[in-house]
Length: 97
Image (cartoon, rainbow, N blue to C red; front, side, top):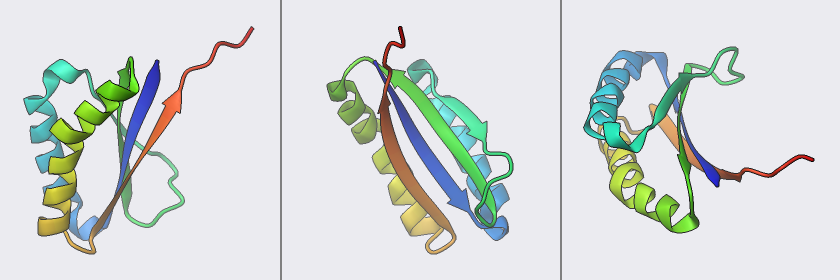
């Protein structure tokens, strides 16, 4: 099982508009069970948010990237250039015995 994380660091000047757009996108993908979090005490300037989803396979991660992440990247690049930065990471759950 995998935890797929998308972090978005945004300048305060675009915070409201980008946050409204992200929330709209999340509503469009409600069936994907995406968790939306605000990072507290972020070491970055501006605001930092994370979208996290638990997926069963690397194939599902690729599908999620194609269905959700690509659109987010495209909009941020086109509408908020140099005002928001996005990066993703994949973590695998491990048992601790």
